[in-house]
Length: 631
Figure (cartoon, rainbow, N blue to C red):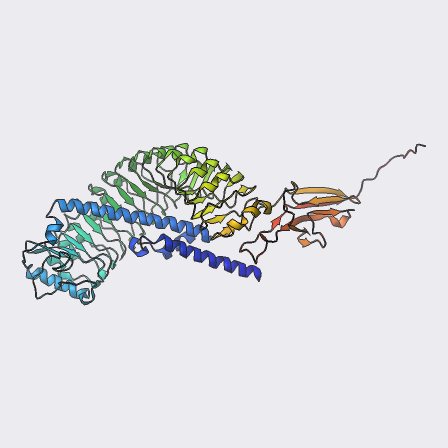
């Protein structure tokens, strides 16, 4: 019963930590704002076999951070495109400060009225100036019709983003022939995308993202020959991506992410020679990454993550010199990582995690001098981390966990001076943890668990004063005294379980460690070495725990035989003064500490166990011969 309560308590604490960490992580952007669906992500991570709460928490943070980076990139790309547009037409400032009152045409005004009525305009957040008995004039921030701009008597600009529009778009929208900019982002617009939108021949920007739109993407959108930005992300769109998208020759941003689109990526996308951002993430797209993508010479952002893409990564991507971000994570990609990616001198983020990639990490990635994020975790990669990777001085996040990588962490690790996140977990790394790791002053999270690291924790670890998120060294072969960790942030989850630490190693730092949000040490590998003793009947034998005599005097002991307590055997040494045949069996000893093994004092208490001693018995051999008595 006590164990059940301890397990429940631990799960509740872990869940609280997960929610608190995600809440603090989400201070800058809301999940809705960046299109992060935590329920969906958790479900998909569990489908991939990730069930440990701490592992889930770590991967959720990583994926959410990638969402933040993607969102920031999308906004930056939009701003850059819009800025270019404003240079090629009357400046927005002039439009918004228009002083000449010229009403728009009756047809355009009818279309506005239809939009107002069909989206429940009476309950918009801001409907200032929307008085249909008066002329439609540009909004200047104080007066005019909110969200509108009028040029030469025609409506050219509609921006009703995040304004509580609730309903559907009216068919009369095709009467806004002079419209260049249409934005109803972040509302509750439902229904299908009207084919009538394809009649807006002057449209350059179309924002319909983060609504409740359903149905297919209409082929009529292929008629928008002047379109520069098409953003339909975060809706409930289904069906395939229409091939007519390839007719939008002026398109610079195509964002169809976070929908329910199926089928393959149309090869016609390769015709969009001006495209700078291609975002098709969070759909159900299958097939290969189209080779035609290598024709997009101006592409700076490629977001294809969270689909069901198969095949290999096209080698030709290495020719796209403008690329700054490649997000291919959580697909079914196979083959090797192309060494040609090392040619992308402007690359900042490379995320290939959660695929089925094999082979080695190409050393050519060490040429990516601007690279800040490198995620290749959860694949089937082998070999060593190339030394060239440790020369990437701008790198801030390096995740190679959950592969079959081997080798040591070199002393050169300290050259990654901007690193904030480092994960080598669940591989086959060995050797000692280099003391130079203590020079990574910006490091916030360190995951080295699930490897074969030996030796002690280097004292230099105490210099990592920014290590406030997580510090996991569990399931290695580490042993010896725990260094002074007073300077490491108390909020860091600190994992030491699954190693070879003893009470004598933990006691000095226990007061500091136990004040942490989460400190786990409750499982350690067995003490000493398993052995077999052949004992002659009638002789004595002494069995010992801590054969190297490294223990604390306050420890208590209990010996077991064949899994059952040996009454009275409560010392570190167990002596059988005269072996009999029934003494044969498997013996081990458990050691406890009055504090570190007290479940009332700690959530995860520790019991150390000696490796088994197998005792076999045999009668004394008879001595045949003549005994000669010498007087």
